[in-house]
Image 1 (cartoon, rainbow, N blue to C red):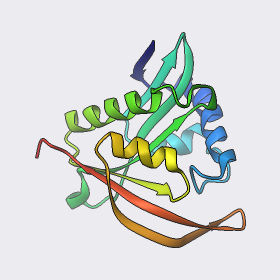
Image 2: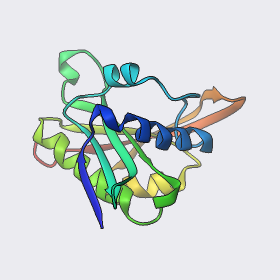
Image 3: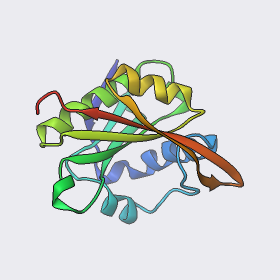
Length: 161
């Protein structure tokens, strides 16, 4: 059984290892190395940072980054979600993203967005299962590790607004 709780600074070592796995796939992020805790902490909303565990082992984490510092966008955030390879395909991602959506609404966010690599079919399915829809396709938006990447922009609007 999975448990979900708020991420603590002490979780960063395990979270960074899961993040590193995502980087290594070449399908999860344009980041080429795991940032320091300080950098990561600065960029993510304090109110929406979650970890999912099974038998006290971190299965994954999710967090939100503000879309823009402009006040008009105060209710919009971008999703980061990473599941350890040991726990993929077991429903951890869906449970975690569902809880993150609930938490985002509790703190007054009205739109969540995700930028998903076009080839990352499991992430696309995860987002669709939790109510995201594709609102854009960006062709060759970035070149990472010598490979041009296409991305989908996926969005979930809160049902509460």
